[in-house]
Length: 259
Image (cartoon, rainbow, N blue to C red):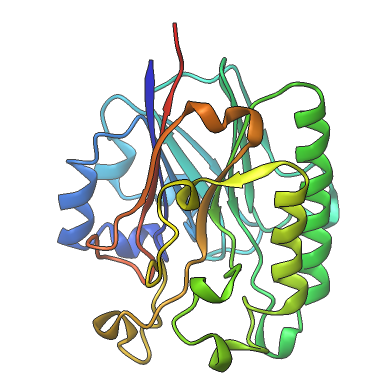
């Protein structure tokens, strides 16, 4: 059985639904599970055309603050269980985590915090990331297969930013953030895109302010990670950098499970 997953930070679900580019993509996505981040909407504010999308179970985790953060998953597969948040009150108010349990794997759809101007939210981000890692390692140690996707708000290595020297000291490329992705990999998780493509200029986010997409002056912030035990189930992983509608583009993962 093959399962196709997509993840996309849409930078506001209501805004992206007004764009023809979004519907050109969504209507032809051929995906079993579509994960959105930065939804910035309550479930009852989702535009009708998307709310009525045929064949999908729909799950959301909303921020307490209106018009902020939030994640949503559209799934053709019916899950066994849904968990919203990490189960830690001080980390769960921003609607950043959906944990969706399927027979073959547990999916985490996550909108990681941004460490902010002058790293003012770095402590919150590190606490969030470390709490998540504890949970991932515990589940992995219990023999669970895990897929961790979303906008990580971290570019891991120099190859993942267009100008590494210029990006030093900037939010999303801070040593503490990059070291956390080192820890994730040391704990036995794999960046699926890099299984297939170790090349340069593979980005998923471009600043609107500098028209960076025209120059491909981007960052790779969006990932699908899996635990090492799942690596052989990974059939493909990609970046859909020809899909417009947000300052991010979608990323993809295809899994195969023998039945």
